[in-house]
Length: 193
Image (cartoon, rainbow, N blue to C red; front, side, top):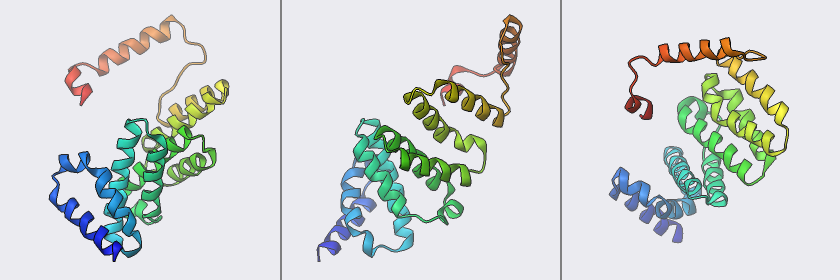
């Protein structure tokens, strides 16, 4: 009986809120929906996974890292490996955010699992950037600075960015010229968006 009540409340709230109101009230909706996971259909589970992602991002932005971890973990429990095919962005964002939340909670096993999953399923090196940043932060946090630098350089090579072993004045000037050329016609508003 309670499951039915929570499900009715969750569905009513979800349908009644606009996108802006949904973001503001996501914790309330997710609170009710998460209690009904056992009775949800697959498509509704994907929607709930997206709501848990939204709640986790909001919690993380408020430095509520344990809560963010909970929401990302719940979202991950609602998807399968097939989600990488049917809703790639949802799977990528859940795994990437969970890697960061796990790092912030010092759960290195979960962080490593999420990073490996993103590396396995990512469609491009750029899609791996968020988890790679988390990995580099973890290395730096563990005082493995040289490894962080070498891994960072290796990742930049994947993105077709090369760095000289020793940068001299000519390298710096050439890089500034390339950057200026590439930024011609780009406004600060374009960069911000």
